[in-house]
Length: 634
Image 1 (cartoon, one colour):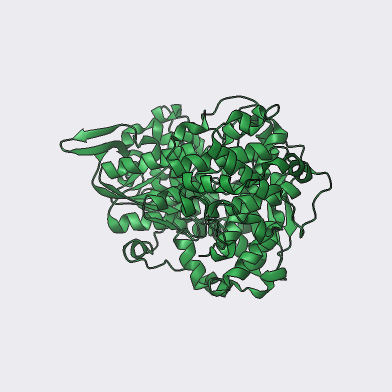
Image 2 (cartoon, rainbow, N blue to C red; image 1 turned 90 degrees about the horizontal axis):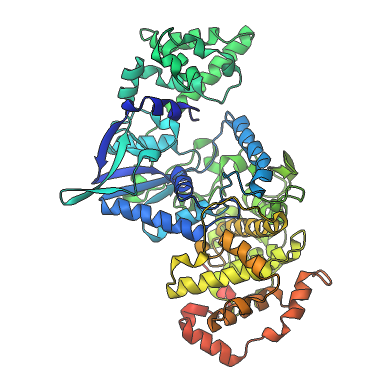
């Protein structure tokens, strides 16, 4: 739920923290918070669609530091919003604010637009590093706290809810976790940080532990009615606390501090009486909502301990147990199903909030291009005729909702969610390729782990609006990344990554955003279909500032005039040919970008000698993997 303003308040009272040197311990990590903090702390660009390789380097450096200090991290990631709609208005407000920030972001300002693959790259990197990771089905705060209490270790996060949970080893705020300044303590290395405990909080503000959930709920921003209470009037006259920059929270704490002899129920009754201008019935209903919200701070039994120690998958909430097959539950917990394919929003509320990106707001949302892909995914999850999904997205600079019909058609009609892993791999592949309108033979000769992005690029090239003019820049950066990944190239190849206030071309950004949205939704569909296409290495596919810079360079030059490496030329030609070659089964725009590019690339056919040289230079079968697509299954 979060307590807005609490972090700022405690920065004023920083004596509440205990300075410690942290090493040789388990650590429960809020993965969602950490991913965003690492991206922000590195000052990586947020307006060009993501700097994934630089972000991956930050993630690796962080967990290497923990390992150097003998800190064993266990990462827990949020999975969804939960059954309650308490936070719906708050979520919608945040979405509206992001939409309104688009014009300023196009001019080069306003951060806060997290790239579509931030969490994907974070999880991919942790899996490569063998860092223990679990994805919860809904919000993870309670399970994080329960696991930390069970193991008697701290939680690392920046979520203000952890100021409320009573944890024996306390809470380490991420903002005070000095990961860049490892110190030596004898023969050991340690990290300087600050530790928070609820006992220090209660002592400082003179309130009982039992009132912490009351404080958090009354102070939260989830109820408009509670905002009408003028808590700042309870700050004692002449007190130094009157100078606080958070008078509302200080007033509430002062009011609670005067009631230490009261029970939780008495305190709630007194608080409800302070709400002005509402009926007794509304007051009673508000009290019930507050009591239900307070239950969020009651620690559950830990279902994650056995997952990390024995591999036992945490149980799903009982109200949806019968809806979700066992294989889905296992894959979800292990992170194999990616970010939020399955959550309460889709399964229970039939609702999905789409990611807002920086683009020309006069044009349609970049998410519309990939809607047919999401419809197939909804069809596999929910079935046809089981209700529409309400998608929240932008229209211009307004947040709007659209009802979207799940689709079950073609080969997908033979599949059932509960038996997808046992389905014929060729059928699962067919569903994926049918959705994209791509025929299998067009992917022959494409490296196995690039087949998914190449298939997506063919789909995007035909459906994007306005017609994309950025294909060559997109493929150029994709090939650069692939060659550097294979040969162990330096991570600095992507160029300048830090955020700086240069204006964007909104139409160009629109095209790149549409491609990323198509890739994101296809990657989730592919995971749901149990990976009929191999997953690509997402961190190497797209680098925002570089691809925008390449697009400018290509206005009057060709890719091969910029990069002269013969390996680049061969792989670039191969991918460009796969994307633009004729497809008898598809309806192509007459004279559209595909036809124009096909005409301009007729001279790019590779001869046999080129292919043999490429296989040698890039590691033979590992490098190109030119086997049949249908043989590459999970």
